[in-house]
Image 1 (cartoon, rainbow, N blue to C red):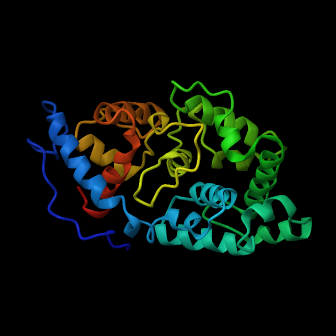
Image 2: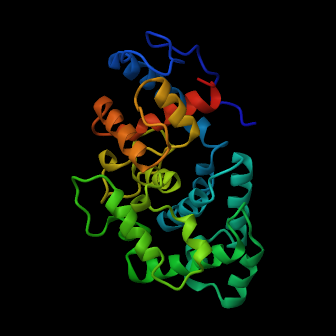
Image 3: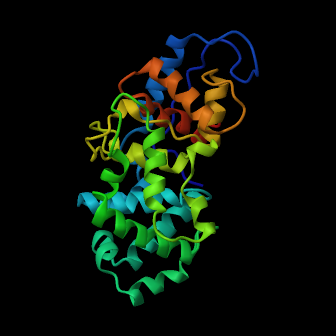
Length: 280
């Protein structure tokens, strides 16, 4: 089990019983203070080593970072150490030059990826992902262009994720491969895509998120929703919905925008840290 990035101080508890399933709203100022403390605690270099974001941190060139980040985020489910190990293995099979591999790999080199597997993500899926990324970098302005094109700067990113998914699957693909890019149109939470977008878009001086993309604003991001963030958010009465789906993602992000309109998704560090490391 991964240790917390830093020793956690005692968690400030908002008024009332945070384990309750119903009751009066918890004071929002106290919630903000709690989440700011935990954001400050977890958003730092010590967080990187035990997180899949450590894989794109192996690189310095923009395209290498975003490709490594995208592929690592796509397989970010299951045991965290296994995610990191398999993401690093994939980078090694790409000779630690992901952009060059995407553009120049021969059919023989691509065929080696048939051996790759992470849970239900197979070698066939992996090869399609490489082919699709090649198409995206050659014809759609790379990952940033595929996500940011035709964007309403005042909207959240639901439409951009849907647009990206259509571009990504514009090549012939196996039916099984489609499940690896979530579809918000079908109410999927798209946790892994929202995680990747957080990595690429959020910009601060903490050294965790990259802030490489300038066409998308941090205020447009949506909070990655998993079992940890969902559980903590419900205990804090930030969300009421039971399912971890797209509607809940929007509900949670709206609540976080009330706390910080310009950078709501920074609180992902706090919610995840409280749930993962402190069993809040």
